[in-house]
Length: 112
Length: 115
Image 1 (tube, rainbow over the protein chains, first blue to last red):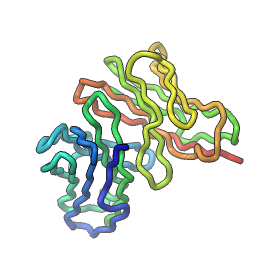
Image 2: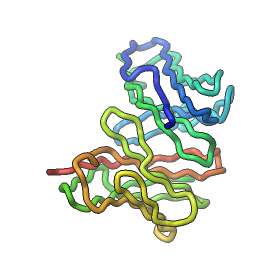
Image 3: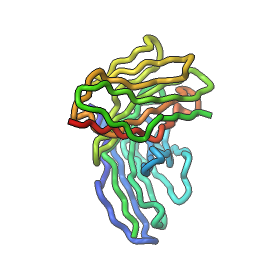
């Protein structure tokens, strides 16, 4: 079975802190994704990566950056956390563009 | 541009009743279509997908969906609801090969099942 893990299930940070969210997949997938999920808005794509060291902006990249130094790991970085970044963050991976995405359990981030 | 509309943010059914969750999409090319389920405090799990071929797709937990090109719909059904089906359901569309096959999600439908 594909396994996508995220470093934390719950996280509380203060405004202005630098925040790292880590995602690891164990199935040698090429593509990885970061979404945020907010009530009534569904899932919105922040960034995605087709391959190692490659990244593309999604629909809401402002205030976020990403890093993919190894194939199995995709990190989401909030350079200076703000309260409007309080949300559920979901990581996903897939073999390539012809296949479905597999999701991690999510990280619920609260910024106070 | 692609988009997905799920009709009804909340659907309530009785245990044993038919489940029908509606999804309409827009796409400029033949789409790939997906239904995902999310249980409380968990990530999304794939229920079923349509890529090509047979338009009636069967998934896990007794769910199925039918791709109707003329209606641009991909409604999710289950003949008999179970209490364990209570969850949030997301429909998604992907134009495989276009823009890397990004997924566009609907806003989600929360399914409640009454005893």
